[in-house]
Image (cartoon, rainbow, N blue to C red; front, side, top):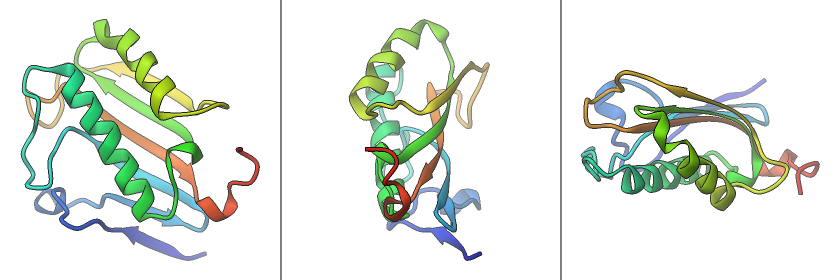
Length: 135
């Protein structure tokens, strides 16, 4: 089975010595996406809505680079600094994902890679070429 690293340009994760994700056959394993811009800067300091939007957009971009899309996500793990944002996550899931919705784990954590980071999203997806079952 072929294993291929998913790369984007520019890659703001490169300084952290980690991959955006890997494609293993028809499955994609995507690293946790946060509100980092193309220059590696965290955006939306203190604003959960801005950070959540950027994290979902970053997830979308990495999936596309790996040959998939948000519609093919089968599992997400969402890390929140404050579970009071749970309802906002439910609304964002409805906007970014479509039915059948992916399996999901949502956790509240005391810290992420930066004390200013409020959300991180990692995902497992199926490649576009193998996703006929999820229409």
